[in-house]
Length: 145
Image (cartoon, rainbow, N blue to C red; front, top):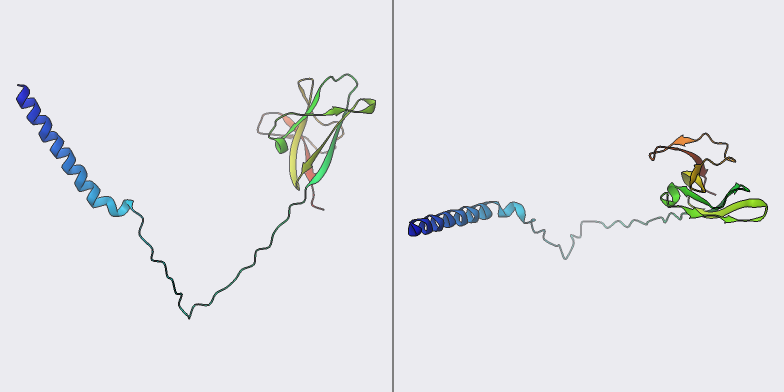
């Protein structure tokens, strides 16, 4: 009984190895990328064209965000420019909270986080927009200089 089982297992192993070898041999051309010959001496009939790249310099601008509140203990700004990670603002004179953020030209959405509550910018006259996070946000558009 054991001997018959061992013979069956050996036959199955031979069949599996034989089939997998056949499949590998047949489809190995599809697996390996073709070798592309490298031409060391280019043809004298081919003209070279040189392209010059123009560097586009992004000009960042320091944008000052301000929020006035005498009752707030902690104010931060969140927006798509900082991946909605709260950046704390500093309290100045007359209870004016400020932060300057370097931004490249583009359109951004943001909110103030005042003592843990989301607040629209009361000084922003633009119409608030709904964002992908499910709440309304103030918008600002930074134009290039």
